[in-house]
Image 1: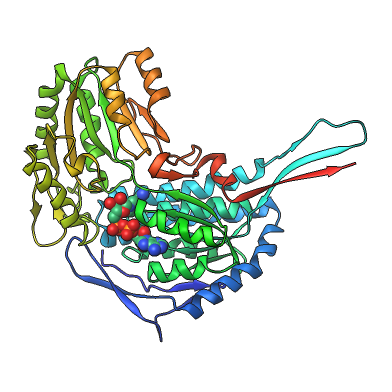
Image 2 (image 1 turned 90 degrees about the vertical axis):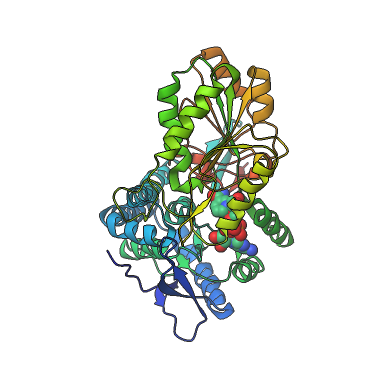
Length: 475
Ligand code: NAD
C-alpha cells in the first residue's frame, strides 16, 4: 500500500494546506524515502487557533453531555472503520509492524468510546448542611487545552489527551509529532466528520519549541499536557510556571522487571521477550532492566538470548516482521552509544548489539551482567535493548527497582502472593504489573511519579485533569 496523505493543519473547522507556509519532509524510517511534506504552522496560524479555541469553548462547554458523548463515540467509530488505512500510514511513518499500528488505532478509538460514557458520570457531591442550606462541589472544564505528543504512539497518545479533554468540555489545540504526523490527521478528520462544532479542536503541526512557547505564552491556554522526554518536560514546566498553567507531564521511564525463581521460566520468557521488542523498545513503559533471582539467572539470559535472536526485523509493512526500525535517525546513535558504553564497562553482549542495514534498524539486543555505573542502567535506552543483572532476595530486588529517579512502570513475575503484595505496595512507580504487561487501558489511570512526571491520563483521573473544582454554598 503506498502512502497517501495530504498533510494539513486543521484550524477553526477548516483544513489549511502548505501553500505559503514552511514545510518539512516526513520520511519512512524503514527505507529513508520522503513520504510527504508537512506544512508548519506560523505564529499567525497559532493565533488563529487560539482565537478559534477561545470562541468555541463556551459553545462546547454548553453542549449537552449526551451530545458531546455521541460525537466522541462517532469519532471512535470512524477510527475503527478506517483502522487499516490509518494503521498503514502509521507504519510507513513510524516503522512499527502493521498489526501493532492497527492495534494502536483501535486503542485510540477505545479512548473516544470510554470518555464518551465517562463524561456522563461526572456527578460532583452535596455536602451535609442544616435544613434549607446547600453546599455543592462540582467540576467544570478548565478551558482551552494545549497538547504536545510524541512519535512513538502518535495516534494513541493524541487520542488519550484529546478524548478526555473534549469529554470534560474543553476546547483543544494539539501539536502532534512532526516526525509522524499523518495518522494524527485522522483524529481531526474523525472529529470533523462526527460533527464536532467549529473551533473545538485544532491540529497545528510545527516546530515544537516555537509552537509550545507561543501557545504557552498566551493567556488563552489554561492547561497543558505533554508526553515526551524528562528534559523537555522540565523546560515546559518552566514555561507553565510563567503563566501559572496547569500541567500534566508523562515523561520517560526505565522499567524494572523483577523475575523471581518460583516462576515457570519458559512461559515467562515467552511473555517478556515480545514485550521488550514491541515498537522496537520505543515505549515509555518498555520492560528494560531485567533483575533475575540468582538461581535462575543463567538459564534466564540463555533463554532470553535465544528468543531475541529469532525476532524478525524488517519493514513493518511485511507480514513476517515482528520489529521495525527505530523511528528516526537520531535514535540510532543514541542507542548505539549506550550499548558501546555498557560493553566498554564490562557488559556481556548475549544477542545483537549493532545497527543493521542502511536505514534506522538496530538489532534486538540483550546485555548481561551490566554494571550499575553503565549509562544504560541509568538512562532510558528507548530502543530494542534489554539489560540483565542477578539479585539475591526481595530486599535487593526492591532496592534496584527503586534506585533510579524514574517511576513510571515496573513489572514483577512471581507466584508468591505475599511477595506480590509487598512488591505492589513498595515499588515506586505509577503502574505496577504483576505477572502482566497489561497496564494501559482507557479505564485505568496511567502516569508516573518522581522524574517520570505527574498527573494521570486514562480513567476518571484522566477526565479530572481537564477540570477545575468549584464549591457553591447557598445559605
Ligand atoms: P524529545 O523530547 O526531543 O521529543 C519528544 C517529542 O516531544 C517530539 O515528538 C517533539 O515534537 C516533542 N517536543 C520536543 N521539544 C518540544 C518542545 N520544546 N515543546 C513541545 N514539544 C516538544 O525526544 P526525542 O529525541 O524525540 O526522543 C528522546 C527521548 O524522549 C527518549 O529517549 C525518551 O526518553 C523520550 N520520549 C518519551 C516518550 C514517552 O512516551 N514518554 C515518547 C517519545 C520520546
